[in-house]
Length: 145
Length: 381
Image (cartoon, rainbow over all chains, first blue to last red; front, side):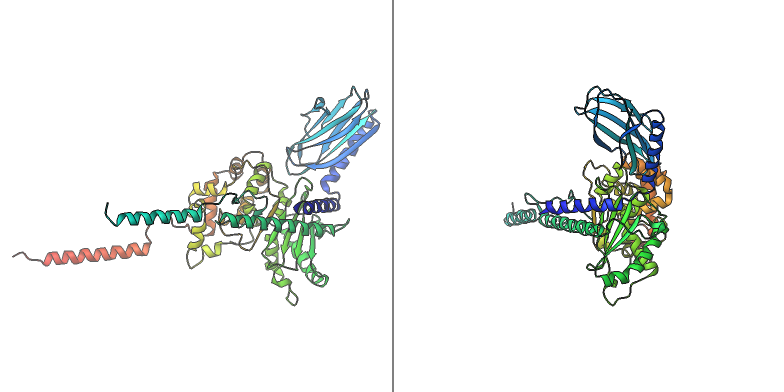
């Protein structure tokens, strides 16, 4: 009896969350930063934007995303976060957990540059290492030449 | 052995067995804590009743979640924030349209005033305030805290009081604003300071957010909850005192170690699951582990300022360390001093009342005097 009720609640909450999650100040801040950062990278020849993703995380939480990367293509993964975010960590690893690229020390603007050896699905892990006021909004963009 | 003694011994053992049978919990009984649903009421009951209450609380919490979700879903794609300064606050009224139309302007205006008075504008964690004007006595509240699926919304489900009935006048002014401010409860803390860091989150979850119920960091409200009863002119409410945990009583008596224990109850918990539904009923203040716990964190925030409070709220350090750093002094000392704001210390220990001691001394002095006078007049022949 409880499970269907909970599912209804979760579905309703997800819907309501989407309705309520109009862009707030911090979300707009991240979107603007991401737009500026990708524009700067495009000026360096990284012209194709594979995807972007924005979300919110509490401190010490992480989120894993899956992307398909092409062998031999040079990629850049950049991350930005809101004004309360103090450290954001990015990691790209294979499906089996082997690291392809890691940035744990770049503060609030991490950038990874890497070229996969094989075409496969890879896992991008975003970790909110430090956030002054939870949750902190972040955005990541994957660019390639 | 005396002939009658064995009968008395047998009767004593039988009485012990009866008491043990009455108080030893049966197998499979519910625990007093550990339920996913938090309840403010804490008192000693039988395991069977605890289990029934846990189930009832779970049912109530799930029902509240459904009602909140339904109310929020009704918002549709365009949520209606209360005002430019309250863009993170949404009011939803559940009830007949005619009643909702009558109540909404008054409640919206008061809620907007409260929001601004608490210094809140656009916040990272928004608040959906669901006022149920259909049922309830006005004392039941349910908080649906942000979680992993919705990190940016905290919901309050508040039953309206008698005033929401047809024909009643909707209250205005300070009374309504105070009631609404208290109704915001933990959600106001989430709005002002974001989601707490893991240690504080676990600590608050373990003690059912009892120290974050009244977000009165502006210091506008006076003593609340059980205090008027316990510090009233009629003296101490001893039934309430005897129902309280030892640390609570020690803290009322002004003992810093007891205050520290009362504040840090639940801080050492390693339980990973944190309740995201907090419910309270009209008797939430019975059995508080700190009196008046409901305003403790608001008073800490008011005392140390928003910056230091935010560092504590969001700290990755253990609660005792983070709170000591924020307060700038030992927790016990600060809390004992805080307790004195609300009244005189509870007399603890075997001290005799002043009047009784004076009377006893007077009687003793009179007795000694009479004896001395008698002795001085006695003549040995």
